[in-house]
Image (tube, rainbow, N blue to C red; front, side, top):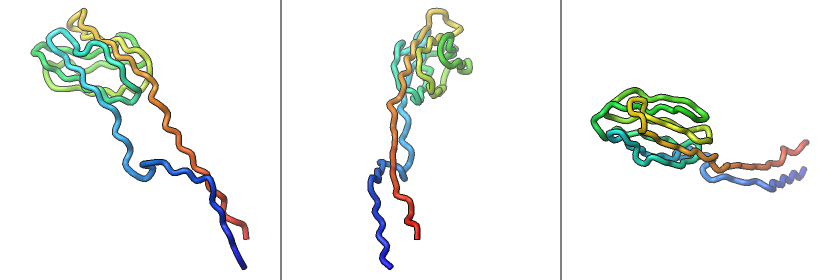
Length: 123
């Protein structure tokens, strides 16, 4: 009995069996009464690290945007947030009116993978 199997159209994706890609990152500094930079554009999935550099107590509070969040009140250290939903986030420190930040989150490019396999032959 002769059995022949043909496999066609198999597409491999880089990293399919390797580790997941590292998400993009961005650092925003909180000085005494300012965000630096004060306007940022990132792709969805970006991990933003807010880093306190001044001596005053501040927080990071979304006042308008697709997802609401508020950091702890702190005067040093860091706070991280993953911006998952695309849109425009208006952020401010609630202690300091006028200390504003705009984060625009764009949809991440799609990474589609396709694979085609031939079913096993019937006997």
